[in-house]
Image 1 (cartoon, rainbow, N blue to C red):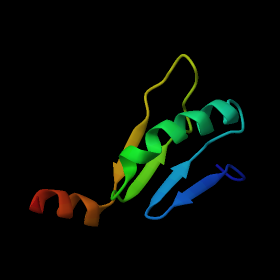
Image 2: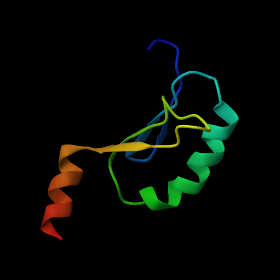
Image 3: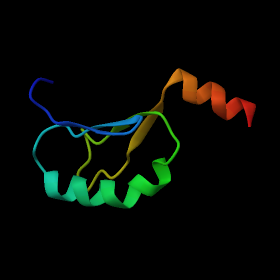
Length: 70
């Protein structure tokens, strides 16, 4: 959607979604960020709430290929 924040950390984009629960999303992101080291893709926090805590990470194609080589 328009006007929803997207953060970028190196090769990872973070789709924040609406501003609802923004503080909690940023706190959750801070805990997840170390696990994203060396990865490429998009972390989806758009639908994150305190009740629905599933977070999806979509790897980019080049990242998927690199993982197959290891």
